[in-house]
Image (cartoon, rainbow, N blue to C red; front, side, top):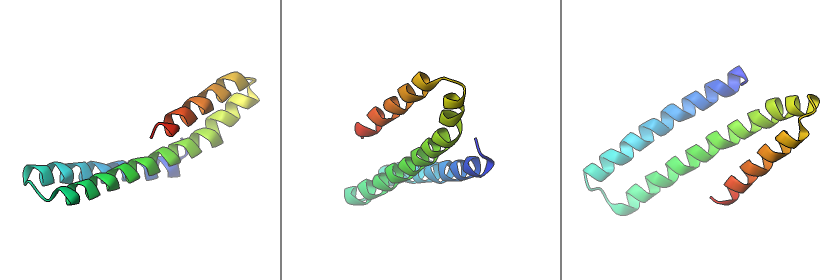
Amino acid sequence: MKAATKKQVQNRLRRVEGQVRGLQKMVDEEQYCVDIITQSSAVRSALSAIEDLMLENHLSEHVIHQMKQGQEKKAISEIISIFNKAKKK
């Protein structure tokens, strides 16, 4: 993984961790449902951004390596798998 990507992912994961703790506190304190849903949506968006970074990293590093090594079928299979998972969101 590229060092810059790793740093971005780690920072975003820490932020998500804090957001999830905040969600738990909101539920514990029985805060307004709409506020909890809004915060939950923010967490989901943050996780999606992490997925985007990881996909970009995978395509630019691993898939290219696989293609150069004659592992086209593996690369294509992984891309299709990721695409199918993304469609289920």
